[in-house]
Length: 178
Image (cartoon, rainbow, N blue to C red; front, side, top):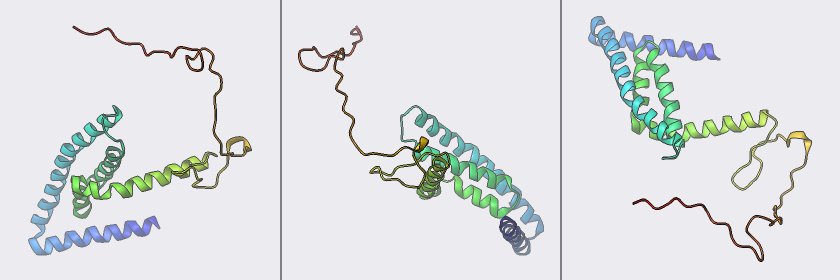
């Protein structure tokens, strides 16, 4: 199957180059191919800095991490496309670097990532739960136990500062600054 995809890709790249060479001439086709690669690497450098800056902000919990993680995956895909020689892959790589394209593809990347994570968790012998606690995939409880829905109530209030006849604990405060 992968060989079939590679064959289609190779035919597409050859057809694009031949069409460009017939339309513009061989020299212009080579020059445009080289220029597209250089333009792609310059765009990668510019957008890569922005994406990794957002990823750094997400690591510091300044922004939601989903968008920077999806953008990082798309920039990595773009890098692979830019490294592969050919005008079609280079143009696809450049297209992936533009923010509107990445924004449009984010939901698909997040969905694929979530599906792969659920599969990995399932293969590890654990189970993934949905929004309301329903099981997404088969799997089981580690150790072969049974899942029982319920509520945990902690009744030990000694020394916690809560309960009848106790004074609530206070949060330590920093001294005021002058």
